[in-house]
Image (tube, rainbow, N blue to C red; front, side, top):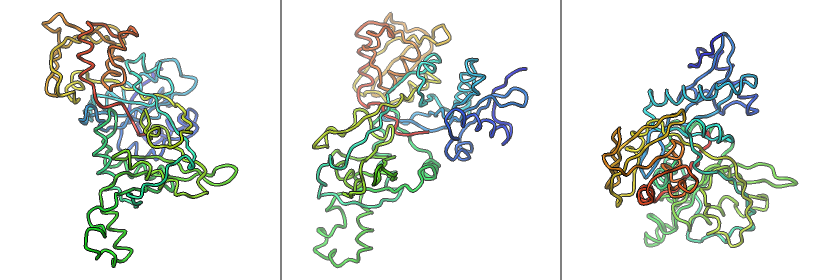
Length: 415
């Protein structure tokens, strides 16, 4: 009987897919009704039996300082007795194809402990995520020029949106994302820090601020622009106390981070350790530059993967180093075999892509996976050449590497 890969026909088929996520992950997707409503679903069906499925979420990711239409592959699961028959690849192709057709995605990303599987499909590992654990005793003294506030989501979004373009891979979170994250992190509290002496501070109004009511003063502090914020939950810590678990962390400058960490730790003996969830901190993390004593436990998780669904559109949507200009041919080796040539010209931070060979003899040859890793700033081509996964003249490899100089890869989201 034929196995079909398509959208779940009804709730019963979607429940059949959820049953496979329980077997694969020990749980079902967090708030899966929201993910289903805002994303794309794909299931593999044979007769009346659901054999697997996946969720595919549309969003933009920043690359080179510009938002690029993208999407995430999440909760991909196949029945144990059907694994090895290519269903995962078919489901991924169906879901990312629909992201491209229905949402204009030119890229797709995924978290996976099986990078080799995705690599065979033309994906590339961009960066390995890490979790971090530190003891509050390692924290430096709080900075007196910062105050702790409880910011609203609008203030957090302003800070996050200002900082996110400085990395490759950060999401421009969709409107529904915040509510979904709130529902998936039970009991979360968001704390922020603002600088003392900002607009409306008592020191700027001739002393009149000293007579303000406490409520007005708190509102005044919250109205200042955030220097950083963290979203935190607490978990029991053995044999006693709690661990402060950080799920989201953004700070505008390095000197705001100690104040933010002090707010998370709260100088409370109940907080026995501070845990940063996977990918909350970029790599390398800023901790070595702020801790007086470095006694941090770092655990590598697994990498986030990237694939260019539409090579010309992805190259033209990305931002590039503004001072680099030139032209070069690009030959992309497809995972299924064969190559596709392109002619690239670039200047002033923009790239133009034309199908076909470059009129010049200067051509760089890359597998599609190497192209994706380089695109995200995760693998310079001069290194790829040493690994045998890029070919071309040294000057052309260096020219293309100069194009991606700048933002480092970071995907601080779980999905």
